[in-house]
Structure formats: C-alpha cells, structure tokens
Length: 86
Image (cartoon, rainbow, N blue to C red; front, side):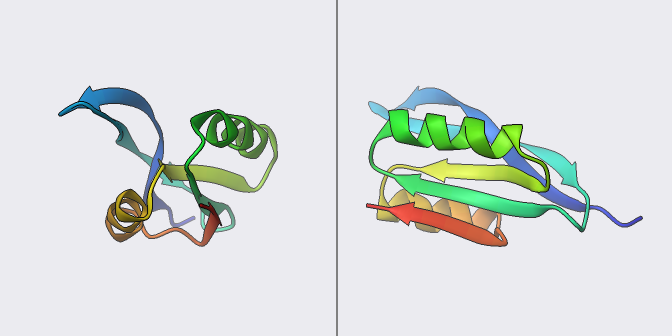
C-alpha cells in the first residue's frame, strides 16, 4: 500500500503575537480523504476537527483562521478537500 505524507492537526503556538498552527507530518493511506479547515472562529474549527477525527475515512491535515493563513496551509499541505467558512 502506498502512503502520502500529510500534516495532522497541530498544536497552537503563539508566534509574533498571533496564533499559528504547527503541523507534524503523518502518513495517510490513499483511500483516506485529507481535509483542511478554514474558519475565523477557533472554537468552530476545534469542534469540526473533532468530528473529522472521530469519523472514518477522513483525516485533518491543517487549520487556518484567515484567508492568508489558509493559502499558506493549503500550499504547504495540499488537501483533497477544504472546508471554508470565513
């Protein structure tokens, strides 16, 4: 079975006065759908991330709270699906 390198939900760290997501690479099976969440409300992102992690066949590979941050996350770890609410 072939695996893709993806980035799983990371811990939030304060960088330069703003919250940023730090990612760590994980292997994702080819039949798993990778998802990036983009929402300006962190509590919503956390809730949706928990739902994605609890379900089968989906894996979270990044989160962003703004369009600029979303571009960086998606370019660094191209997902199969992006869920966007800004």
